[in-house]
Image (cartoon, rainbow, N blue to C red; front, side, top):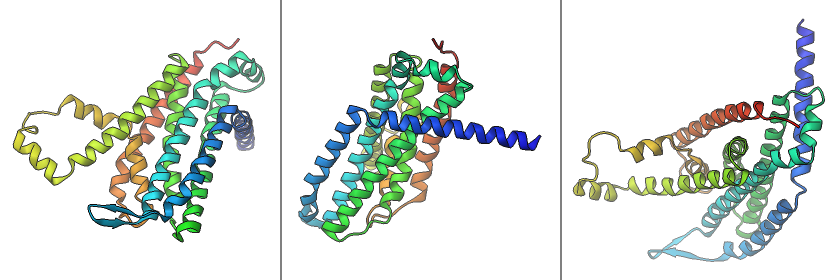
Length: 285
């Protein structure tokens, strides 16, 4: 009995791995992906000279390598998230239109095998791309500024959880609403998340808190609706910013990472369930 269960699990894992590999090959040879990597190459070429520049804020000289490393980290992470959303947006429609979906599901492949393989392929492929790009940028920092950032790739791995949420969100929403609207929805969620995190960081400033108290902004009883909505909002921006604190000499706070990480993981579970429910209801022709 145990041997039969083990063989079944091995066969399931092999099926999902094969589907994931095919997804990586199919998606990462698309024209949009080639254009994205060409844009990344141009971006890296332009950024080379920034490591030698000097940056002064309020008369205080800042470390150029740290500033450039943080900026390039966020640009690449945001770019790969957008790329992952674009690939996830069209995957169901394209494979339904060209008959790939019907062909695969006519074989002894369960729907959840197909779904898991597609999600894993998109997530692993985009994560590998982000790690590779961040690795190149880390190498550039070493060659141009002789600075080693051991936390750069760890921060990149943490941002891969954001990629999983983006893939799951777009795939799930594309089963319920038009795929382009699904892309715009997750784009809007990401923009609000980053802006909201910035506002939240400013609100933590003692001077801002003092001004708000004097103006009576915090005098209302109960929890405002916008604050409740922000607590439940996907913390894509919070996780990326917390992960980026691993880069350079900035102090890292594990407490600041836990809340956004738990938030994003919970959303991944919910969206994964919605994706499964939605795909189970799809008519395959």
